[in-house]
Length: 193
Image (cartoon, rainbow, N blue to C red):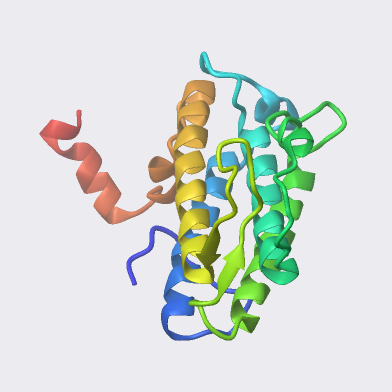
């Protein structure tokens, strides 16, 4: 399967579960590459007109992995989205570290993957928490929940890439292609200059 990064899963799965988790892991890896070699202060720095930071995006996605795993395992038909927690997810505070949130992200990802590996079927329907933007309860398949997490991660990878480029010029694609022969040829092409 075509991925941008070398992907290894923490669970032993095959078929569609493997395909979806490989794509998700590739996006997770891309996000972590975007954050590589940043200090805590740089991870907190707002480098665009947005208030988003790389550290806060990783914090948000760490919570997202953890919450998705919990929604699948708890299957709470009365769950409501926790707006108070959501309001704290988009800021990496002074007492938090990038290393701490990257570790939390890895733990959340491993737990989510374990829950997916243990699921009997990706067709299982899971009750979703209600939220101000979704007041009626929805039931989504585990498959759709994985796809949503892939989409959410990819979406925020794009945010993080723009923030990082504004910080110091690093792009994620540039970082993963360092030292690759094809990248040198690409950079030398007239249209790439």
